[in-house]
Length: 253
Length: 253
Image (cartoon, rainbow over all chains, first blue to last red; front, side):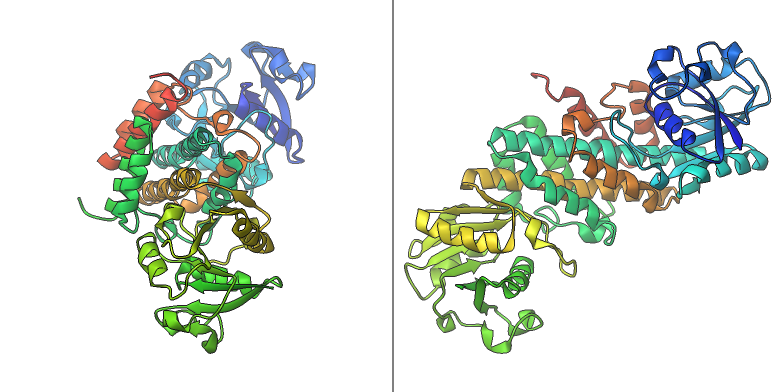
C-alpha cells in the first residue's frame, strides 16, 4: 500500500479523502486540517492532525490548499527530501518549497460540496521533477482514475484557463439563460434538454462542426432582432462580443 | 389519424418527417420540397410535391422554412382557412399570411444533419389564435414529445434568445477551450468530463449555486495570471467581459 497524507480540508481535500479511503492500494495515513471538525464527518478523529509536527512518515504528501497558501504551507513542513505535491491547476511546480521533492497532482474537475463525483473518470494531470517520483504518483492516480495524463506546468496553466472557459463561463451563460427565462415567466427547465444536447454533441462532433445559430449563418436580421429584444446592457454586450467572435473564428484578423 | 403536411426540406423538416412517419397517430400526407432529391431518402417519391397546387387536403400544414420565407411561402399557399403553423423560435405568429388560421409549432432543440435525436424529450412550444386549433396541434405535439408547452410569441422570442446563450454561445466557449488546448499540444478530450459535469450539475443545482472559479471567488491574482497567459486579444476580451459579468451578477448597477 502506498502511504498518503493529505494537507488541507477544502473541497478537493474532502473528495480525495473519500476516494483514498475507498482505494485498496492507498493507505490514508493522516489529514492535516486547521480545525478537526471540518473533516471529522469523513474519517477517524485520531487520523486528523492540526499541527505540522504531528505529521507521520508517508510516501506522498498532497497539499490540497489554495494557490496562495502553497508556498507558505510547503515551507512550514517539518521534514525534508520527501515527495510533496500540490493540486492546483494554475500554480507552477516551483511554487513548492525546495526542501522537499516536488510534484503536481491536479484533478481537472469542478468540485462542489454536497455533490458526489465519480472520480474514476476525472482526468488527473501529473508532473514531477524526477522519474521515480513520477512512477509513484502515477500509481496513486491510476488507483483512483482511468484518465491519467503527463502535463507540464505550462500546459497545466493552459488547461486551467481553458477550463474557465468551458466550465465557469459556460455556467454563467446558463445563468443568463435562466435570467432571460425568469424575466418572461418561462420555466428554465424548458432549456434543459438543449443544454444537455449541446454538451453531448461535442462528444461526436468538433465544436467547429457543432456550431449553429444566427451568428454562424450570418443571419443579421435575427441578430439585430435579438439585440433589440434584450433589455440588459450587460447581456447585449456579451451577445455582441460572442456573435462577433463566432463570425471571426478561423479568420486571420 | 391526424393528417399533416410538411412544407420545407431543411433540418427541422427532415427531423419532423422521420418522427411523424414513426407516429401511429399522424398520417404524413405530403412533403413540399423545392427539389425532390432533398427528402427522397426519407419518404416515397409520390408523397413529395414541388408545386403548391399539388398540395392535398390536410388537418395541419407545418411550414418548416427559414424565418425570412414564412411570409412569402404562407401567402403562396393555394388554399384558405386551413390551419398553417410555422416552426420558428424567433418569428411572431403574425408573420403568417392572414388567409389561413395561424399557429406556431416550435421544437426547441439544436438540429444537426447526421445526428439522430430522441424527439420524445424535446420541448415543443405551441401557440395558436383559437382554442380548437390549439387542441389539434397539442395532440400532434403530444404524439411525438412528452414536453409540450403553451408559449406566446413574446415568450418564444425570449426562449430563442436564451437558447442562443446556452447553446450557440456555449458551443463557442467549447471552441475556445479547444483552441487553447491545441495551441499547447493538449488533447481536447481532457476537458470532456468537465464539460459534461458542467451541464449535468445544473440538473440539481441552480446556475447561481453551481458557479465556481476565480471570477466567482474574486481571486484577482488568478484572473490576472490568466489574462497575462492568453495570447489572443479576442480571448482576452471575452475573458474580461465574462469575468466582470459573473462578478456583477445580482448586483444593482
